[in-house]
Image (cartoon, rainbow, N blue to C red; front, side, top):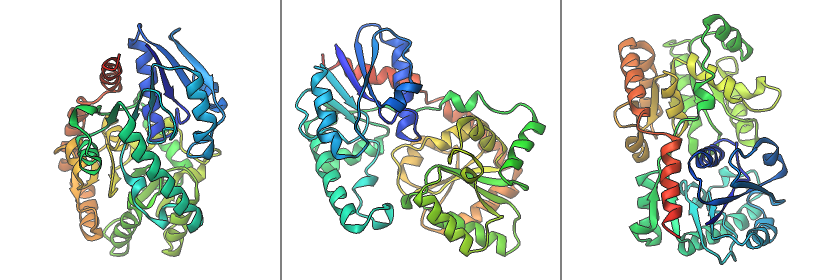
Length: 382
């Protein structure tokens, strides 16, 4: 079987981690199928196949662009694939051959003018187009891959899709994080000083989109600082973009720029790479993830993998993926969050218990297992 994978986001955060690890693990285990990996020139420079059955195909089509419906569609058709895997919702609307797609979550379907840097007219046009494309992708795909039972339920309820058409493949922890855990405490302290980290700190890793609920985290932390209940810093490690800049302006308005640090501003690239992330994870008092909506949540797993206790918003997918291995707070309550921040900071026994539970929890997940389940799904369409 000739299988194509849209890898234009390979290596990026979030979905890019999923794509990278899927391809790398498939290379290790599939000796029967042939693969066409569709990549941009930039991605082609960092992805070098090790399995001779995997071939790169360079495409010039930006993510979420009109080119996906024209240029990318033609490239997919020219490849004459037996099966195409689009690891997101953005399947070219007129693609007629057999395909599967991965639906990570439905955040993009919510109309939210705070979730864009475009003007309202452009955003409305784009939002309408995305809804059309995801609806077509779900209805016309041969199969749908999702990262959790929560997303599976959403697909079934919102689109009336049969359970047999959906495959849950839980995600994993990237070894590019765990293999770079600093062994020397002195070296770690020097690295942390680069980011102006002078005290104990809480850590958040990821983007600053509105559904990540970072304003709530900042307000909760501010309350504890102003009430002199803590001197702990808050480190936000996400790339520099309009959303993080908007959040930084909010922090500046609160006069907390020395207490709440945007780590990417201390880099030359505008983002924190995996080597530096390993240090930030390892040195954190606790990892905090206040999101209102997720399909899986990889970064809390990464924190658990390096031995950092985790504080999570109490949403269904977090209960599914993390069980009792984390401390939960009410997602919409900055009062509850501020209380839990202090609880996890001041209770050594609790932190140690969460660290041990975290190590047990991550044993349930691996990219290798995810890739094997995905390959089984591919082969079911022969």
